[in-house]
Length: 435
Image (tube, rainbow, N blue to C red):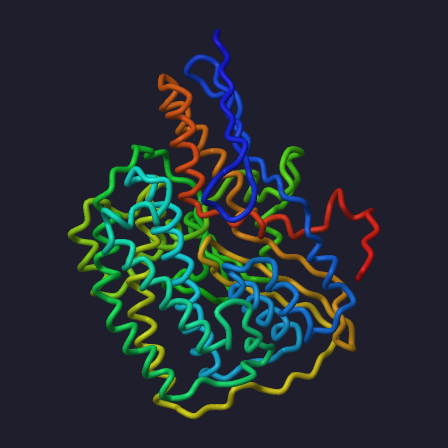
């Protein structure tokens, strides 16, 4: 039987460095590997012995794209450890910040990283001459996300305004009204984005349903205290590590996560699939006329799911600003007194569920940390999907298999840099010099 080895040594249009290896024997896939090739960055070790006030600014550097997710998950874990409950206006402003984060990240991904694959271009900028309005829309939507983040955090990237207990400063009423106006204006662009990605041709990949996971059983939510599995299981943030098991596979620098030894799906497709009934009426009305139907088992439809989330988030952003202004001005933060304890923070990042856990001594210094990122959770499922895709394309030439393999990985929007932050397991014996 003829053996064929297909390699993609450098994944393009993803955040970080990764590779793919597919080994075919006839029309069967013998092996699939997604290699995360970046070196470990030791964030879990770095925060040890640091004061609780330092941790959010350190861990937010795990990623420049989803720094808001790391920062919010971190402050929620710290507040949980110290038994701090923030008032509703602070929670509302955090949720509005999440709207900005998702607008920036989802718009960047669907237009600049994914769309060129389906339009036959090497990049979004190469499309500008023949599709100028599409590219303008891409920049407009991405820039709105940046504007929301800058307004609330003080900077487009790595804003320091997100702190345990709330925010260092609070946006003005005029700034919030300006954001509301922009969100109202963007609705047409978001609807056009949904229609565009619904119209694209996606290879068939309707595998049997797999286990899917998202925050909240009741509705589409981006922060919370419970996880919901598609088999009906609900577990708390304290039980996360009892269900999501990390291990090393020997060929990747990232840990690989499973539930009961099996791959599972997190991220936009899982969130939309699990929360169809709770979507807003306007979103449901648009989805009625879509060619692609949900729930979907085709992982390439994750890009379509991102556009549906953008539709939901645009509406949520407007509602959040109205709620914030109804009780304005508000206290921007609450006092925190450290104590010994362990806290957990759950947050839906654009790519999937993010988990932060910290333990502290009585002085508020970190004694232990664990961070489980979406890409680490998704690696096993990416390999499962690549195997299925490669078997369907086994009669095609190598260039075609490579093309669609990269499209599949990009559909997950992996943040590879995020997935190699750990120090644990085989790295525990290394001596790290704190600079």
